[in-house]
Image (cartoon, rainbow, N blue to C red):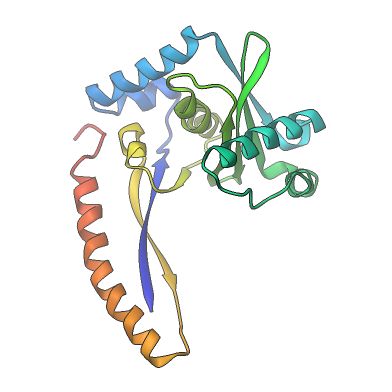
Length: 215
C-alpha cells in the first residue's frame, strides 16, 4: 500500500548569491525575508557555519544543550543523545554543517544539517533565547546561503510547516510503502489511504496556488 506525504524543498537553479535568489521571489515574499533578516541583524546576532571536521567538543555540547532545551519546551523526550551526535561528527564530518548563532559573544542558538554534493537536509535546531526571525535565519537562510556558495541543488526542509512556502520552499509529494499481515487491518488502512491520497493531492494543489516565485 502506498502512502503519500508532503515535504517542502528549496531548489537552487544556480543562484549567484542570496540576492539573486531574493530577486526570483514575488515582491511581498522578498520584502518579508529582508525584514526578518534585518531584525536579526539589528538584534546584534551573528552566525558561524562550521563544517564537521572543525566542530569542537564544546560546540557539540552547546548544540546538544539547544537540542534538549527545545524538546523540553514541547514536553518531548529527546530521541538522540550527545554520544550519537559526537559519533556521527567523528564518522562523517564531511557531511555535517553546524550553524551557531551568537549575541554579544554568547551562543544562543544552533541548527544541525547533513549534506552531500547534491542535497542538504535540515534536521535539528534549538535556541536558548527568543528573537524575532531567529528561527528562520538559523534554520533556513544560513543554510540557503551555504547551498548557493557550494552549488548544492536541493535543500530539504522536511515535513510540516506551510511557513516554509513563503520562504521559497515548494511542496514535494513523498511516498512510503506498507504491508500489513492482518487482513481486516490491512483493508481498513488501504481504505484510509485511498481517501487520504485525494486529500493530499488537493492540499498540494492549494499550496502551489500560493507559489512565492514570480510567475
